[in-house]
Image 1 (cartoon, one colour):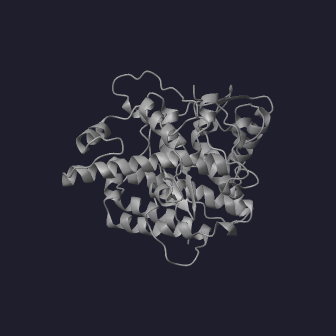
Image 2 (cartoon, rainbow, N blue to C red):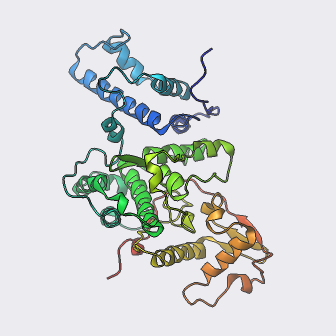
Image 3 (tube, rainbow, N blue to C red):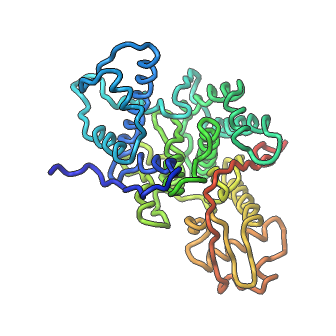
Length: 407
């Protein structure tokens, strides 16, 4: 028996109407490389293009295995299942690169699945920090133009997607393919760039294809991870998804504080990976309270304006304090921290006393003498620490006042 190239993560039995979760296991297979998933996505895009062209012109095509166009079209219209998706990814995993000629895994095919993959850029290398911040501010301003108050719902996102302003924005995103990432020489610059880049990719994905379909998913965590993996940008010759930016870069591939099955789905870059050089030496503090994930529990979207430490850390701490004041609960029994810290409590410290001391310091920022701990008779060294449940329902929450630099 031939060994399997990877171990499938089996999908649970689905209740009626939960087809959304079927997409979750598709891109994730233990042992499969990112390049294999990219090739699989490119193959799927080629199949859809061929199917559409075949049905439009009504011509007769014959596939490599001898099937005619009617059989091929019928096969491609069948719904994708975890079993068939795994088989297709397995075939692409073992497929030989070909003889000397064009490889089936061409870089341009991989980048075609990027949100900014089709946009050309003929200008000089762009300043990375300035470019990513300007693009995020531009997209936020476009969304705000169509936003009449309340939540940014699907109707607003559809208006933005169909607007000329969004088309112009997408053309401008090609500048990130020429961004000079080598100029990000210190941790502060890398933190500022990649936090803004992550939030840009997530918001762009929400407009382009809709927020993550986690509200009705049978397994919301893998469903969200699958969505985040599909939201990708090209940075020079490198391709990174939202999940790559958060976990492989900003979190440096640290072990996920959760179930083993979820940990196996998170990306890590080995030392010989070209993308590994983009990692900071250390993760930013309170990172979970700065990343926008388009879910009900995630931090609202904010634009990071500072470029250098300590101004950057001060800005991130201010954002974290604002979020904690609205989402944390301090009572006489203890402290309940918001959902984003449920899996990433290490963002605030290494132990309960360390985390609570950090929370107390954040809540007393901005010359605020009031201590939530003292008013409830709590000692940070002995208080009970709990974490609220994470609400995976999709929500586009933008902190408008923090998305444009004060003048």
